Amino acid sequence: MKRAVSTLRSRRAVGYFCTTTSSSSPAAASEAWDGRFRLHKLRGQHLLTNPRVLDAIARRAALRPGDAVLEVGPGTGNLTARLLASPAERIAAVEIDPRMVEAVTARAAALGLAHKLTVIEGDAVEVEFPEFDVCVANIPYRISSPLIAKLLFGPYQFRTATLLLQKEFARRLVAAPGDGEYNRLAANVRLVANVRLLMDVSKRDFVPMPRVDSSLVEIQPRAIAPGVDLHEWLAFTRVCFGQKNKTLGAIFKQKRMVMELFSRPRRAEEHEDGAGDIGLGALDDDVSDEGNDRSRDGAVDFSAEEVGAFKERIAGALESAELAGKRPSKLSNDELLRLLRLFNERGVRFQ
Ligand code: SAH
Image 1: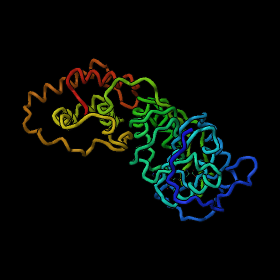
Image 2: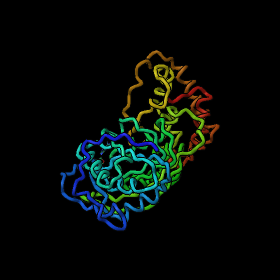
Image 3: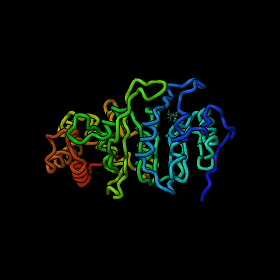
């Protein structure tokens, strides 16, 4: 059996976390908030303290013997304790706050399960994750989008990610085309994964109580490669969903848009492909193309005829897709992919 290399700073069993006397669940006795730290809201430090919810998350993650688990933001280890007690073989937990690194490390030691835990001190958006089969986490909500981007568009292969997210974010993540909440995030995630809502969790189950409720979501990467260049797809959905309430016809008629797309193939040559290159945090639709004038350089040497012909190619693609009158938020990924292919066939690229 592999033994986790631990960054244990202190193997002292800390009294606060001593759970050996607990009967039914070895972890349950220890999640009461002990007031030992000042918790930082900016770091999303809201500890999940309801034992039933913690048990439910561990159960829904359906860990199997031999599994390598990734946890992001273990905090004092309320969820980690369940993961350690599960059939999983090992847990790697990425935690940014050294005080929490120490706390979760000490807690694993107190449970006699330190050999199953590796704590990586660092920013989960930045560090390289070890290989894992399943990700289970109550994450700091502000990194939801970049973390999901990293999991799904990074170099990792895993079975499922069971994540506790802000309720509104979770709703947007599982939205379907045509839903009021459908958006770029959902379209991008749907390209590569199936997503489902598992349960809602009240803000009262956290200490300190956050302002928002939460939802547990399961993300299951799909085995089939989508057969599309991910850089291009992400750039394409950025354009479409940047103004998701306009029709595609209106979006692609704007002079600014035409000029930007026209100048893109040149800039794309400077751009190397590769999964690591995908802008993390680029999944969401809160960054609109409005006001993004990067592409101006070079525009001056285009002739009016060239631009006019390019405009026609864009219109042609929309016409043959019969999508000019549709809004991006109503389109399935199949329709978006079809449109992207028609654009590409006419030399219109998104990079
Ligand atoms: N999972 C624990 C704690 C949740 S609070 C529980 O359910 O009780 C969120 C945790 O994520 C905190 O411990 C915080 O320090 C940590 N954190 C915040 N930003 C992080 C980041 N960028 N990378 C890794 N950990 C982070």
